[in-house]
Image (cartoon, helix red, strand yellow):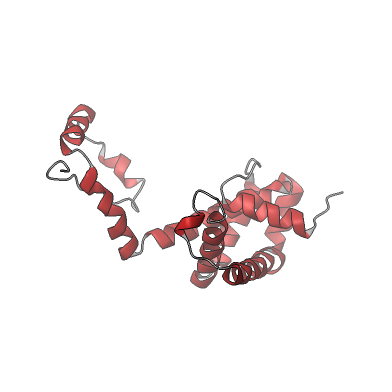
Length: 177
C-alpha cells in the first residue's frame, strides 16, 4: 500500500523542482506533467519560482547574495504548499492518481520538473533578465569564438528550429581589457 505524508510530499516537491526526480516518465506521468503546466497560472509560476529561489538561497554558498527574511520564507513555503496541494489534489487529481498507480510516487516529482522548468523559462524571458545575462559577453574572447565558429562550419538551419526560445549571443567586438 502506498502511503503519503506531509514530509514525503514536501521532499518530493523539493526534489522535483530541483530536477532530482528519479522516476522514469511513462504516459501517465507525461499526462500529469501536461496537466500541471496547463493548470498553473502565471501567478502560480511566480509562487513556484519565489519558493525555489528562497529555498536555494539557504545554501551557504548563496546565502550572502540574498536578503530573503524568515518571514518571507515562511510565506513562500505556505504559498507553495497551497499551490502543490491545489495542483495535485484538485486540478490534476485524476492524472496524479493515475501517474502514481502506473509509475509510482516518484512520478509526481518527475512531473513537477516540467512545471518548474516552464516557470523558470517564463522568468528567464523577462527583457531585464535577458539584458543582464548578455553582460557576460563583454568578457568573452572574440578571437577564440571566431576560431570556434570557423571550426564548427556552417550550421544546420533545421537544428536551430528545435530551440526557438534561444537567442544567439552576439560575439564581442573586442577582447576584454
